[in-house]
Image 1 (cartoon, rainbow, N blue to C red):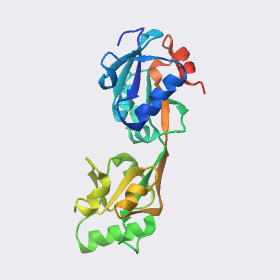
Image 2 (cartoon, rainbow, N blue to C red; image 1 turned 180 degrees about the vertical axis):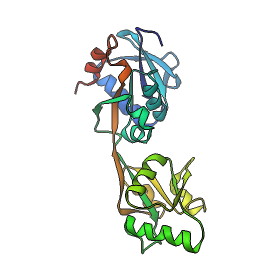
Image 3 (cartoon, helix red, strand yellow; image 1 turned 30 degrees about the vertical axis):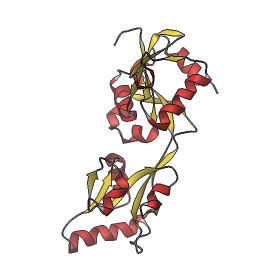
Image 4 (tube, helix red, strand yellow; image 1 turned 60 degrees about the vertical axis):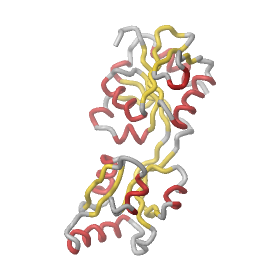
Length: 230
């Protein structure tokens, strides 16, 4: 990484990208990309020393952790899902009013006797004793899910990495329950899933973060101040 270049990570797709781009637009910072929206590299017209990188929101967290990004925009959920050593290398500077969502534990509607995590614990032991297998939990958030369930006394489960639409897993025989990020809960309902009454794991929103290794880098405070204007 060039010493005097500031690298800023912006989500490469989705609603989060649009909302982050609006921050730049609102603060009259003109982003330039030679090949338009599909370009993975860009710059800011007013700042020759700033490089924009359009990356997956999860990768932005990793790159902030290893110092190859100086500033990044991503979700708080993805920061908290990352390894502790990565989290320790990142400052959260701003939390925004967009990208709001909640990571929750959701179960199939027909499980009428399961309302709370305590009920889930009983089911997990039943699976172990009667079916000789562990309750399977499909998720894209294994670290947060494991930590939450352990904290609630649920230990007899197996995590299944979700590679697509997590809400479909219980109905394809891939898992019994899921944890998933949701903004309204409507997608879960549409897929015959129900959030446990005490199944909220984490509330999230979009954040501006900086790598701690970049804290004293030339020009960083100036651009952060501009991006922080309301």
